[in-house]
Image 1 (tube, rainbow over the protein chains, first blue to last red):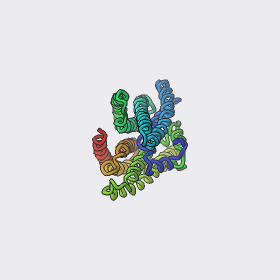
Image 2: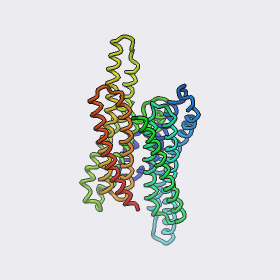
Image 3: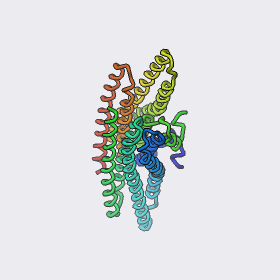
Image 4: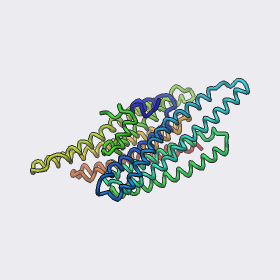
Length: 209
Length: 209
């Protein structure tokens, strides 16, 4: 099942149920896609308006990158739940013989890596979404400045949410070099998303006084 | 059209389009409903587990209030777009005679009030969502602590997003007493949502070290 083809109600029903997936990881990616959608909207509300002619080039870029990001986030929303389900499958593998134990451990290790790599990609995409929100707030239609601001808030929340999902999976990874690389990429991306989102929030709040 | 009955893809397509509604206000309410859905999930993953027997009463409350909140946010997601559309209709009213001008002005004033009151209610519901996230993080199944943390991040982002939508509509309100009351309620709720979300984030981050 692809989540983007379900209704909003069905998705939240599934979220609220007593099954752990979809959970925070898929929701983080969904919020990223909402941020990208808002950025595309600001671009669409700016393009073609004479008053903003000098912003059109920038808005074409926001629209193009926003639409790419949106598709990426939608894919990540599905991948996050799939990687969780793979982990649960590995957990249920037989563990009676030594051979079975080794296979199960290897499968769980691989699944943990995937369950960490997916939210890390979500977080890194949130950096791009936060960057786009700044361009949308600074150069976009001023009637939509609060929408660019909402995009920044969502990119930041989605990025932090994705970082929780990286962190919670790191202890299950035996490959120390992989874990170290993930942690470093996570910290770098988290700092960047907060920086860009803060810059956008400042612009937006100044515009609304 | 009710947004909860559309697919996620169709909603984001509509969001990204060159129509200003749905925009940040409806997205804020949607994020609130995702927070409430995650809180219900944490409660459902805790109820019935012997290990958490002492938390069951609290989790029944989280589940019940989370489900109520979710329905409220879904309604607010629709109301936000409806109130924007009412404002656009008022804006298009004829303004040739003095009588028409007065009718149009009155209709725009009423629509501005609705467009402010709806995100204010979203923001106040986010305070409740942020409070529930704390209970879910503190007393819920520890395997789902990151999900309670994501709920707090979303409640905070949705609350701030809703506050942008209150602020951007305040200047259009001629009724000064109403505007003053809205601003005061907004500031109070915003401070509360940030406080509760920060408390949850601290708990969650301490649990994931």
